[in-house]
Length: 287
Image (cartoon, rainbow, N blue to C red; front, side, top):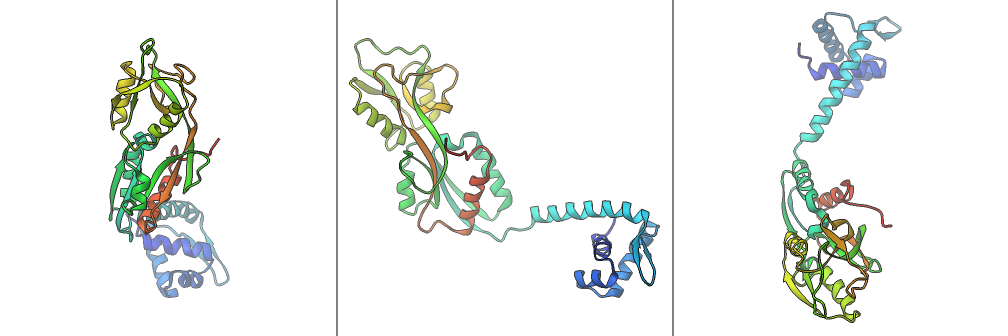
């Protein structure tokens, strides 16, 4: 049998308020309407759910069992309504982030946001070499995740990561020759940090491989063509950290921070930013 949620709500209201009058006030109905709904429900169930006297109203034993089911059903219906109700938020969210911040989390992040806010259109720029700060300042993006040195405070810090020099486990530079390096195209924070460190290192070096794709840099490193700069957590099997070797100075840590454009705090962009802050695995306290 199918139970009308309206009748279930009337029954729960009577139980919680202890009277037909107060239940009617809660549901903005008349007392006679509540009485009629309870009578219909009991007729459908085929059993008495409430015991009524002139002084007292109690729930029968069958009513107690029925109440548990009714509460579960109404809770599920309320959750389903909340989940699938049309979103009043619409518009466009323009978001940017470096490849190594989101990784495989990008798809579930966008999917979760699209389900919650189907009327919002996303424009996403994920790249290691696009100047996201410049895009934010120019108003081309609403919000972006950027990398910066720990001493530079900007936006909301999401997590801190250590940069390292990495190369293939079999990598050996030419003896007496220039050290081959692989970098993303300019502008790139990795390249800027590496350049500052190389300026202080008494070594010869040259860029032998350039790619805008993290997969391209990874392939060049694993092939033994060059060393590069990556985060410590991105070092994978087949690679080794070479800080302090070949004259390479240790690198600093960097922060991932969420920044906003001047006019970027739209309702839909704020909801997306909050989703980033709440998503497990994306945000971690600084060490």
